[in-house]
Image 1 (cartoon, rainbow, N blue to C red):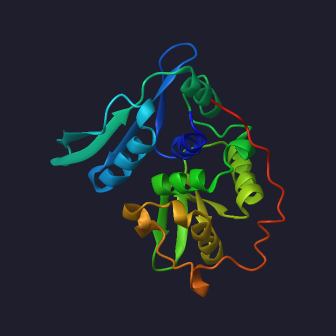
Image 2 (cartoon, helix red, strand yellow):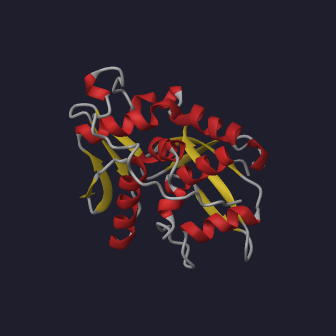
Length: 223
């Protein structure tokens, strides 16, 4: 697996992707996105093409409760021991998604952060702030995740709960910092999540961002 593919994989595992166990040591990756995000899932497919079984397929599902048909796209990878290794990092034995103890070494690339944000991020235009929605991680896991973001990217979101579920809240200055870090990696169809202009004061990194002086965790070689 190429370095760029590992970075995309880490971002989407933190986000919407699901790693399904296919044996004692192997797993496969499943991707699903709504019709609105068709371009995005096809971008993932092209980036991970050598790992995938087939290109995304359009699926319609009727929900009788709401009398509505939902359209989405799905694709999945071949099973492999490499993906099994990632599953052991990001899932416990019961199949619950978790934040790995090694997250500081795994979540280091702006591309990983961008994919995670494109998956689970939301930009609230009125207040110019961003959120990343999270699974029900433990307090220890949430603390570990926030520490990794501060150490590796110099961003310091606040942990809040919305309707009982945790999410990372980025105040306006931290949103500008986040968007400046990930902006070049956000694909065209997802730029509605990063509308701040990095050329303007509104979108600049503060001069004291300290990104060059912050200690970086060493790379963790995987797959």
